[in-house]
Length: 204
Image (cartoon, rainbow, N blue to C red; front, side):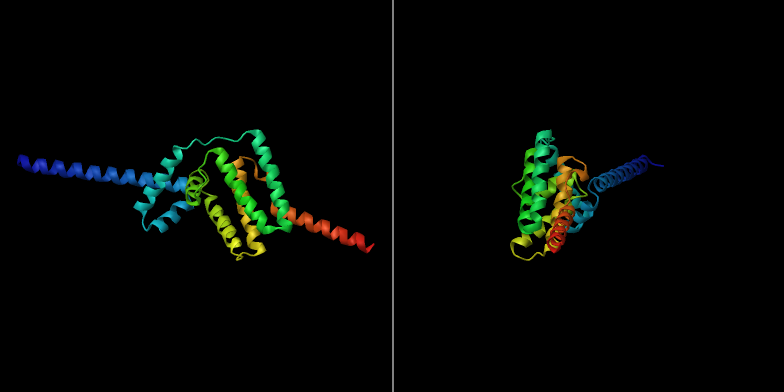
């Protein structure tokens, strides 16, 4: 066999090996992004219109996030926020709209104190998706309901869902057990029980 034939065969072999290596590397990167972002990966693919653009976006999110100085809260700050959340939950009974606004504000305050940029909602979502991919969709939903509430387009039950979603992210940002942050359903049930008790006392 002539020398040039061997050169062509070797060149083709190199190309094949490089193609296999590139494909395997890309597949590995895709798996890592899927593992990191979960459902957010698939949502981004749908929004971006393709896997390549979506993965570029997710890699950019992670790169921006790595440049942030995310820090834990002090115990004093954590306790203060828990007390503020309890006040917000109690407010829901008489003022659901106001409680949702407070919940949104509290989440942003915690994010800011921990080192997240907070001026732009889409940026907040992008940063949260890196650390809390399982909660980012709840954050979008909660924020969407809060915006609808400002237009008088949200029911009380919608607002309740919003506060629940904010609570889930709030607890994660505070790095406390979920049971350490009061649930709006518990507050509502307690208030209803107190009302029933007062009614019974008036009947006696």
